[in-house]
Image: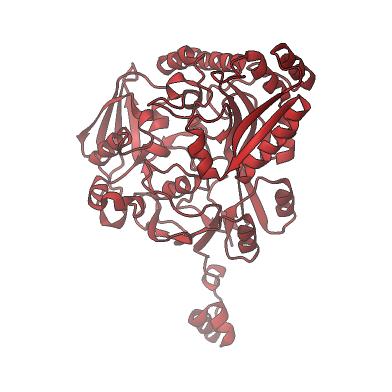
Length: 522
């Protein structure tokens, strides 16, 4: 009887008494509870139109759907496929788009079916700066209309580089239920309702977020029935929890020694995936001494990106090749980056009036990945006669300080939607300059490529559009608005028997996408 209780209870006991055998699936039920350990302190907001932290982005992707989606495991725009919309068509001039919704898609928590009115409400909300952090991305939308309960028409003011990208399962593209948002109000941020495969049931602040399967999910009931998303901000705490079997997967470390240790651990797999975060040193040419291009060029020559990539560790880190990420549509592999050359850097400084070298100050982040790069830059700059004085502050404080235009040089790591327009606009268009009402993340106040960035947005010929993006990169590099350093992928560790349900090569949510197919293998 002890044996019966430990391996299958009454069913196994009955089988033994009857002299029959159970199948492996009867005797050993599939594991259906998943526990994840993440490098975050707590939930911020789970309104998908405000979710911007890595942790929040990961969670909203399990809860919500969009009109279209990136194929699971991909960040390639060419893999975009139907999601809530089962089909769509565009007018010849690409200004009017009509989407047909899947019938019978159920909202979670009893909020009925997804309708065209929900789509109109969601996209109108996404474009409203008072109700969305991503409103600027939707400024080209003139109107969104419900033609009938399952048909939506979107009319644009002008063409955009990738409308399907804006409507995909990322940031403002997520569709929310009008009735739930209006009923819950501000509570929607921590009590979200979506149409996705997992339903949030409870948040224990700073500890864990609980989910259950959405049994009426339109793609089928998920094989995983419960998910515990545990906040383990300390890397050592995550490692201990993973080693003890308390979590099945966890945020990994972009660290060579950690990776080597995981590679030697039996029954463990490491997933390294896009979007890689591009680390760039932005240089404000409006501030002395960087108003002299020779000083900016000296900084570029002082940088050894290959050394930084090697120190941070391969295969998850690579030397950057341009001022936008490699996975972006429109990326240019050879924009004219200046090579590492300390002697040339010193000569340029001498020409600019600094024969004895130069001291520059920078506010930096205490976050581990930032701190490592900043220290490497200090050492590299020293070889070129540049003394880098760092004022390191807590990461959240650093974010606030750099948006007050306090730095002349700013090291910043980021991933964006993989179409060149987004990265170029947010980091290198003059309208995005820090201090302006339309500010985004243009720390360098770069304006040399405005013409090309704007022209590419409305160019109907794909080849010409890409050439505009290429020319923008050449100009930004030539002006030394920024010096690209490295690209570092997202890293997770998991048990080998945990199958995401797809090959994890990319995830726009910056974490594993849980789907109805995610499961534990026998």
